[in-house]
Image (spheres, rainbow over the protein chains, first blue to last red):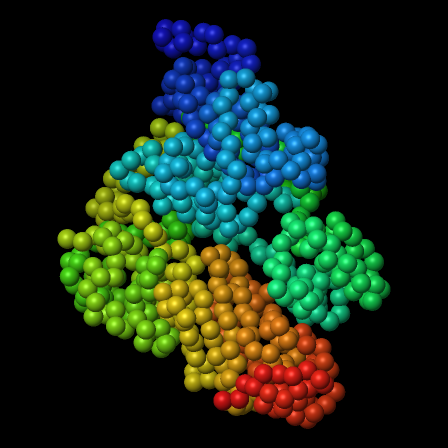
Length: 424
Length: 184
């Protein structure tokens, strides 16, 4: 007790309110938790990774919550339309990379915090890079990027190394709606398990767009999807190219005039082709606050964390609902993780398939198999069967590497199996 | 953090007998696994064939439809399927590689089929798409047009539409637009 109170000295000033929370137990804090210097130290050395559109809020919150080693990834540059809510950016910053400007701004305002920016995609980094962090917090703008980080973090979990488990805190907003969730890779429900909850974006039937537009948006979709292909087949459309947007805008405007539809504007054109839903500053603030407080609680154990999904709806009043999303037993990412199997590398693929039929947990009758790179054997359609049939006579060592993963599906089962084949 | 790590250790001890997971390497992606399953569950019949330019890449392939009845009988129609890593959240992208005369397929090869766009749901599979594609050739649909002239033609005079389909399939032209020969 004396040692911890000793090293708590000098921890005054800007952090004093935080230290109060971290140096005495509260009614809900975990029984095993030891408040004090150790906790504060753990917090200050936690490497945190944040990314994306909620970034400004999250970065500011993390820095003010006492995290001192923060990394931030963002691939975008600052646009004039960001300035109303992305408060770390100023007019003079337009065109500069978001990650760098945000990092410099927060470092300047919150002394003693180190923020390392990376300008690029989260997909540019590999497992070795992600391994250095303790917690990953995301405010990503696409399902695709979420699925990527989710499966990467799940793939990194090494049962022999507890530190390889990186909690993922995911925040997302769309207009007045938002969500925050805590994912403990392989322990709790993951993003892939929850994928069915995302309703696909309502799309307008192509034929409405092609024939009788009713709304200005239909005219823009027409210009974007149909007119562009007819007239400018050789240019691939780039939604960040002003000339391209202007072309689409003018084409849409003409079509709208023809059908007596009003309201096509340049801004709306940008919104439609880039699929922009207006971002609301207060929604971002609510979601960022929720996600950062989860990071704080997980990093310090000072209070129980969210289990595991909080939805927020702010269209009419303020509504939140928290529930525990369940793990999907047949989740293609975190469910049925690869089982280890030791095999004789000189066995042929055909014999290996026969042996799958004899395994108690599988008893596969008509399996098709592949690795990430190769289609090993695919029973249907016949064209693929023909192509892959010669593989049956090849030895396993000729088809895959030691330790490579093989995914097996069989029409008799609704779930798929994954095996990691280690050679004897 | 320590709490979570010890949770993992407990889970691991429980599963140890089974020995889940191991060293990480390239994992088969969720989209690949789903396509592998979907392909296995296809019913192609004898009016459809698939080809895979690269058999190791099952996310890109071609479907050929040879309708055995209806106005398009005798033709062979090729479609490129492109499945992205976001499948089945995103529908597959389907494009006709030939220039054909069809009310629901435009001259660029875009296809108007509800389940490829507004009605796509992740529970649908490749078989549903392929059945839908086949249906377009049996029952071209004038009320959902992508090629307006062809739709108008079908609506106003079925026989003239039929004649135009035949001549387009033979490589002829319809109202000044020439089409690709698609007969077997």
